Length: 125
Image (cartoon, rainbow, N blue to C red; front, side, top):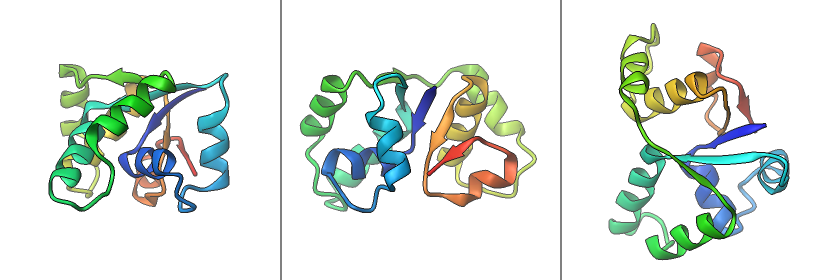
């Protein structure tokens, strides 16, 4: 299964937080699954680290992603166009991009955020 990891899922996984659900942790640790991280999530995690909202140095995050073969998912024009066209009241542009990427890249989105359920994204938690 292809899994797109939401920023909080990445952070909780790398930090070893009990906030990551058992289901999400099992999916992430299953070596049969392909793990992806969006440029959106990298941006959010870097932004939060710079403002001391999370206690994970960016270099530690990058090292953990490399060690675990997490693949980068760049934002393409197709992702941006699809995100802009959603008939969805949710205004968070980052969530809109994640939803577009999950759909267009045929990924399940590992996220605690139930807002994605409203548009039929395959959300795993």
